[in-house]
Length: 149
Image: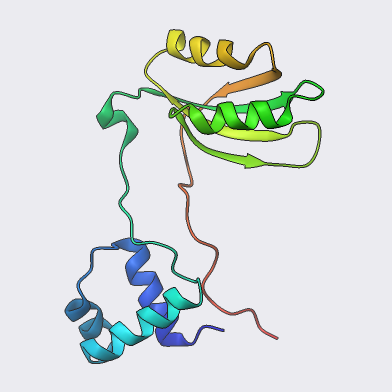
């Protein structure tokens, strides 16, 4: 379980994972060593998996993003999964239940590049692609506040 100080630390770090220990300590009213120990415990428990950065794909030339639903042909599930893992333009992928086996986010510079990537798996899977127009909610953590029990 998270206490109020843990939730406050996580909330600060979600907004800026580069916040210094000194600044974290000031914001939550603890000493830097106490904050460091709390962060270590959160890491040990697996609550914090990484301190990371947020990269803008458009700044790197990836003008388009697509959501691709992928349904491997019979007997091709592991082959398709390996292909998805090897193609760096797939930024994330979930293995899901239902008609499709995978739902993936793809970063591409053009429609031609999208076609080229999808052609690499076309003989092993059926795909359905949607171009992302906007992202009203960016990836975010689950709510940190505790439900009333």
